[in-house]
Image 1 (cartoon, helix red, strand yellow):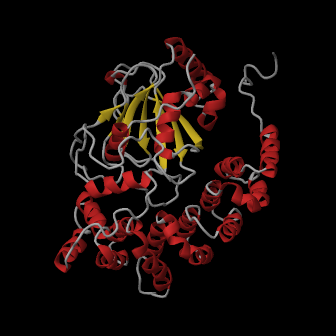
Image 2 (cartoon, rainbow, N blue to C red; image 1 turned 120 degrees about the vertical axis):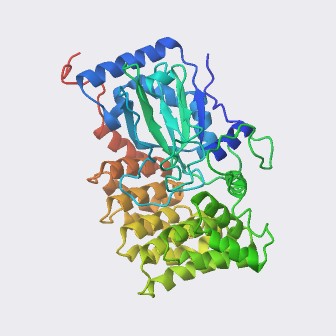
Image 3 (cartoon, one colour; image 1 turned 30 degrees about the vertical axis):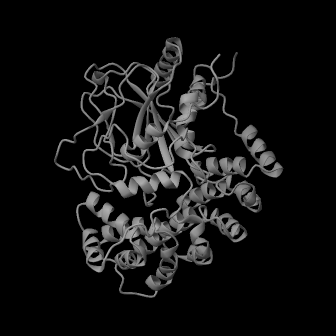
Length: 477
């Protein structure tokens, strides 16, 4: 009998995920299991169309996939033991002989900073044998940290195809560039996409960790650049260390000037400059704080990535930037600068606890982008929970559905300390937006107190959906 104990990733697999942003793994269900899944998918797609977010309840056996130890082990390793499945899921059907376009998945219109740290991940599961000719998903390794299509106009090298026997799946960093590849066989190809989020910040490694220090993986698949400092910092962050690279590099004024100028370079080079500045002590932090105010939005964004890993030296400057920018009417990109500073404070976690009052005050800002960034950051703070919970509870009534959704996710990260927000979560269960409703329910699960459980159970019973009720089978048997 198969054990339900998660099969955690090894150090080598985690090193590969950090650098490449993807892993191709496989479950060991019997062939009959996948044949049944495909048969059910064929029936549902033919008779009812794509079930969309109801994919999991409509194909009930699919739940076994996400209880499989290879799947739970991979997600636990990357996102921690209490990861959350997003309410959005989608069955992708590909019978096209034309490749899809390269893209990153969006946040449903939400303009948020993409994380270098793995806060979100996706699983793309293939329930049928998927040879290259059937059009598996293609992933461009190492591009999860690039905002722009740095390979524009060139055929990318090193594309990884999620090709293999039934039960193969791609575990990918949420922000990686990917596409569908041509299905030249013309036979049905399903890919079942599910999204997952971290609800706990790492305090120690959640994979099968044997080696404490970072080193590059043996199989490094990179089409563009090496990012030694960024990879090391991510490994350390996943091991529970915050600001680990701060003050680890000795740089003179000339080098600081060179790195500052480098923030305007080709994105992979600019990322390396941002991280080296973050490691260069106060002089590097000061250069990043200055770059945060750049009229060049990409420079400001890259400076924020550097400041997010620069440790405690960056916090006071970031807090000051929140107020300073608001008072400078001449700033052409005030909204982006504030959102970037908020992002960096959130990623600094407990080191930025002093920023909580300033962040709470920003919830009065008219910009949806800024308010979204604030609720996201507040869920990462490790102090001031009473003030944070009150703010996030109020944010569940924000005019923006994205702010409401991100507020519920932030409350999930706070666990039982968010009990005071239960009345607002109860109201959010009737929100007009499907994702706000779904993640208010998830928040109640993670709050986990008796009142939260009672509220959740009542909601789930009232909202129960029957997976066997269809147009052809309305009532009996």
